[in-house]
Image (cartoon, rainbow, N blue to C red; front, side):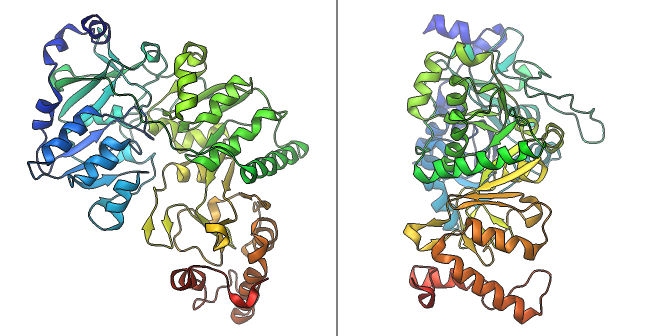
Length: 506
């Protein structure tokens, strides 16, 4: 252990600051604001949160926790269930904390992931009392080498009053060198971000530390919790084929080539499964410029389809993680991890001309998308980076299965119960039923494409009946709605457990 620690902790000045997790936890007081590393269960701190869970058994305290995105169970399950979190942001994906949010026990600030660094920089989030950051190493010069994510760690380290470092001796030494830490200056004074290709490097391999702010270093040997994505199925395979055929038509129209534009795929099983469809396609020499690299990206690298991948996090299932981290040198020269204010930077997304694929919870007949709230009230995970990408991408694509709960729920409804992405940010919709290209269409022109191409057959007649009645009742308004019936599908679901109207039963 001593030899391994010496290799990981190479800065002489910091060696005297190694403390037990319990001592670090004792510094955390009621009402503090914490900035923690971690993005989609990757690179998150673990041993200090576990010590805080133990502390909560004998001491009443609550803290505000801000991160890059979702964390593993140490925070988003155990610390949440211990009652020690007052407010959480900007993204979560664990049922433990989700239940606390939906019961009102935890305040949740859902936000675009590219916005958080600016909120910290302006002092709207904060002041941050402690940045608690996982590291793979600390260099002689005092650079903190992140592990499997960067997220908001650079801005937390820069702006926090004090820093606690979790030095993870179980993380690969080969991670050193894959990070590119570039932090823009204050708005109004910053230079253009000089990134023109997914593979460009702009900054340093680690996060610069103010050594005087480092309060303590805690040793960890807990690896990331594996991702919870499920394998592709017949319907996601069909969706992938629909997307590939759509892209082939874009090539025929001379808008793309077989190397396309850099790809972005959102967090989750459906987006991952659809991206995996490129594996057996003719598309090649692909680049990825995304927020998270899931299993599919590494499958595509192995297949020789993806030549380079840029993101802020690597989040893998146990099986794929064992394979990738067991031979990481094979991938290291094809990867870069950046701060999320760079990976999700709207200006870069627009300039690189990304093809963005994200998941919808539900969408309506005019193309508005709900990504976050079940029946308009219950939070699922959060908007994440989908808004950053959808609004600014060359192609903003949303994927979803056309139904849920065995057909009791239609993913396409007259009016979404909550709007995350307005019709103006949604270019293309893909379900297992087909593709709706909404670009350049007026609202009423979108209706037919969405219902006929993407809705489940069991709900098409019911959707058309709603639109035709609303169109007649309004006299053909720009976006016809019957406000008394617009959310009747959700009301019927709440009362009767299904969105199906018996009068349209097959």
